[in-house]
Each structure stands twice: as C-alpha cells, then as structure tokens.
Length: 225
Image 1 (cartoon, rainbow, N blue to C red):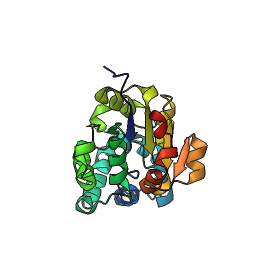
Image 2 (image 1 turned 90 degrees about the vertical axis):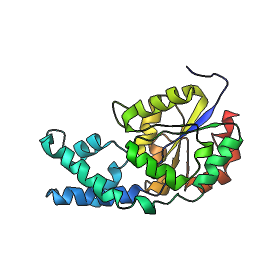
Image 3 (image 1 turned 120 degrees about the horizontal axis):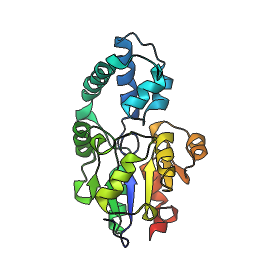
Image 4 (image 1 turned 120 degrees about the vertical axis):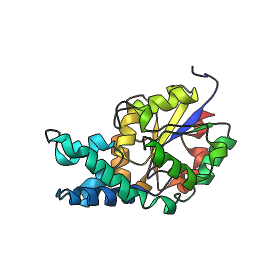
C-alpha cells in the first residue's frame, strides 16, 4: 500500500554508492577467462548493472548453451567475495543518504545484488539508521533494464512512482526508471560517461554522490519537497 504523502529517493548501490563497478568487471573477466571466454574488459564494464543472466546473454549471445551459466556465476561470486571486507563507499555517499533522510525523504536501496552481497554493501555504507528499506535480487523476477527491482522497492517502501527519484550509475538504471516514468539522476562514478547517461534519459548527471550532495538544493531530489 502506498502512502501518498511520503516521498523518497531510490538508490542503486553498486557503482552508485559503493565503489564496486570495476571489481565486478575484473571478477567477471576472470570467471569468463577461466571458462575460455575471451571478453574484453571494456565490454564487460558496459554490461555491469544488468542482472547476471542478461549480462551473460549480452556478452556471450542469447543462443548459447546455458548449461555453464551457474558455474560462471559461482566463479564470479567467489572472486568478487574476496573484496567484500575492502568495499569502500564512494565520496559523499553516507552524507548524501543522511541529507535525504534529514529532508524527510525515505531512503531506499533499490539494488538487485544477491542477499549475501547486500549484507556486505550495507556494512560498507554503515548508515542503516537512515535506510527505510532494501531490496535484493530475490525481489525481482527479471533484472535491469527491466523495472522489476524498482517496482519491488516502491512496494516495500510504500512509495508511489510519481513521488520518487532514482539515483543510478548505468544506462541500465536509467532505462529501468524510464519504464516507470521515474526521473533518474545519473552519476559517472561507475565509469559510464555523462554523455551516455544523459543520452539514455537521465534528468541530470553528477560526478559522484558528493557532487550531487553539493547540488542537492537545485536537484530533482529537492523538487520532491
């Protein structure tokens, strides 16, 4: 049930609030290399933000034999897991979440990371006291660029699509938000350029959470009131 009086900000986490995009890139590159798939890192990086099923389709082709997909995901997870204790928030991430909460906005982590990864991401952010709700891959039937995870975030937080802004770092984030007519603010700290994010439909683009925080009063978030 939605609360028409409450407003909020949905945040992607990987590459938006926590500096993980290139860690995922390297982990996928090594997992694919171990299975004799030679995929350039630049292609992998541009796929980060999709769910693993769509990422593998994008990189290896939708008509491939999917029998090995589980082993590829397991290899990625094992490699990425080695970084968990060293995960670091991006500049201004904690302060941005707190500033949104201080404005009376619900702060929602709309991530499609697996539940065990979400635990590591939340530990890195260390701001559970201002987070209203958190999603995980278990909450979405289909991964980004499908909007399922945003639908789940809205349902869990009781927010309506017309009363939120989404903050993400990939074109897949922008695409998912666009399917629900949710304004999406893009951040380039995940390695996607300003031109790419704006071209995908981001209403504004900033370097990182700190830059968005500095411009908060003039941003789409301020328009939530």
